[in-house]
Length: 135
Image (cartoon, rainbow, N blue to C red; front, side, top):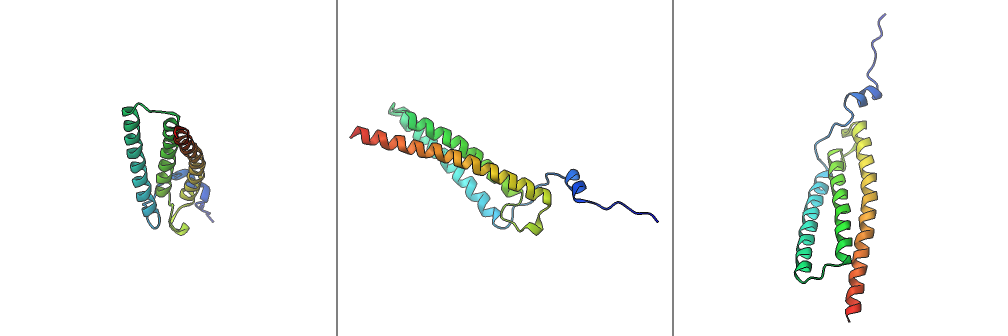
């Protein structure tokens, strides 16, 4: 009697550890909205920096906002990768490797989102202090 080895979960992960899936379900709107907000954020920041340099008023709030935007860009990139690892899809359409990679990227993105929120809120606070001090 010959027993053939069965294909286990560990061999499935070793053969194809990071296979990306097509964006589907609720992942498609998440992908498009993330891209739109990322482009709008950079466009707004570039216009703000241009005006602030034109009036020679580049300050601490602009540096904080720039740092927050860089962290937001990292967050958006991780969210975009999450969409290609099955974010917004039912788990029966995904492999275990995709679910593991997507979940890991999601938690890393949450860390960067919290960090960028801190810098952006500090930038808003410094801006409000600058406006209040001018009056």
